[in-house]
View 1 (tube, rainbow, N blue to C red):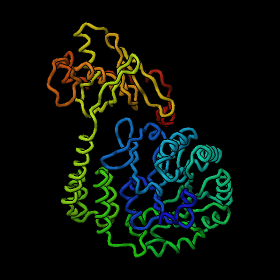
View 2 (view 1 turned 180 degrees about the vertical axis):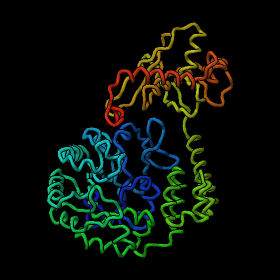
View 3 (view 1 turned 90 degrees about the vertical axis):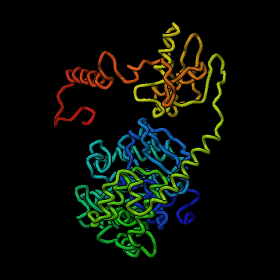
View 4 (view 1 turned 45 degrees about the vertical axis):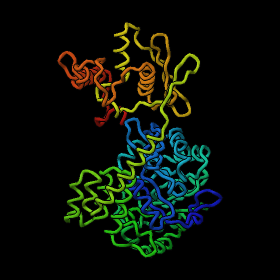
Amino acid sequence: MINSVMAAGRLSFTNITALAPMVRVGTLPMRLLALDYGADVVYCEELIDIKMAQCQRVENDVLQTVDFVAPDDRVMFRTCEREKDRVVFQMGTADPERALTVARLVEKDVAAVDVNMGCPKEYSTKGGMGAALLSDPDMIEAILRKLVSGVSIPVTCKIRVLPSLEETLNLVQRIEKTGIAAVAVHGRFKEERPRHPVHCDYIRAVAQAVSIPVIANGGSLDLVKTNGDIDEFRKATGTSSVMLARAAMWNASVFACEGPLPVERVMEEYLKYAIRYDNHAFNTKYCLCQMLRDKVESPLGKQVQAAQTNAEISEAYGLQEFYRQTQNQLQARRDALQSGSQPVRPVVDGDVTTMAVKFERREYPPQITPKMFLLEWSRREKLEQPQYETVQRSQDRSFQSTVTVGDKKYRSSLWEKSKKFAEQAAAIVCLRVLGIPEGRIGEEDSGLVCKRKREGKANGTTEEERSKKRHVAEIQQETSKIPAVANGERPEQA
């Protein structure tokens, strides 16, 4: 199947059937399931450029995935080798430079990048993204040209049709000139919703007006209910390729030649992927409820809705043993990786002592940090307060910090995603080289940080309360500086 969608080592969009990008649906389990059932290409859910640009690429050796992790440790995008040549990364963007930053971040791990120009929902359009771009063809052209010239993989976009056929054809012809590999066309106007019939005549006219592949979208429910209907939708729109959203969300086996298969079987296969790849339980529940459709209030549906974890969801489907075995396998992999890693040893680099360590927030109590321990130790030893010097690497905007304590310098050789984390990593190196406790969970109480600080209390006020008071004061101070904004929006939302 791979050979049929690859041309000269690049993903081809001719004669394909694709899983459409769908918010909360197009995560890794659903994409892999669609590939299993016969989809040629799978799109991830729309991911916003601002959030993705802050992510760090992390190779997850336990799950055997590549994760793009936000500063708050949320996994924004997870992919794996199985889909590398088939997955299209869709972004929401209204800025050429940010779009390129994100595309370059993911280009080694995906087959193509796509720009969402068709989503009519407010969360996308209010930032000038999604369907809002349809009224700004200059920005569309700027974004696409920047991407086409800036990355080594194919670039595509997904649009909706405009109110007039002439406007639609003018737009897609302008889009074609940017050098993109394909355009997906949702055959509804921006104001229309799934209940409105799809405009196959518009899609057909687009396919005739350009030479790049056109991917027809919007035929679920009315035109595509079974696998055999896919070819009928192709004929109705005059395109070689088709993209399915709701039909695939309800039953991904619509991609199979004999599809659709019984939804109970499809849900179990989906859930196995969700367990195997540690999918967020909320997302797992959402997708299963979409598959249940009118059975969502059945006993099974109610059990799924009541579940809070993937373990509880697995019980609803009788997959407890699969869940247990999978967790054992993942734990065994963690143990093997941990036992196989060499102990981190300090290395002298000029006048700086370095170690390969990272700051993992979850390894420390909420109110405790290595910097706090180092500061308290320095005070006890009557040394000057630790001094931190931090630099930022331009290519990925990562940080590295050097701490000076007692005329000696310490630094982690690993780069961190934020200045604060880089300083904590430097503090860890210093503490470990000097053999000083660092405050990790499970350490014996060293007495360096008093119990009052451990509990987050000072002068009878908790750290949380002090933080709230500071926050209120800051808001009051800033409010006095901010002019009134129409419609009650904050300036950053306008």
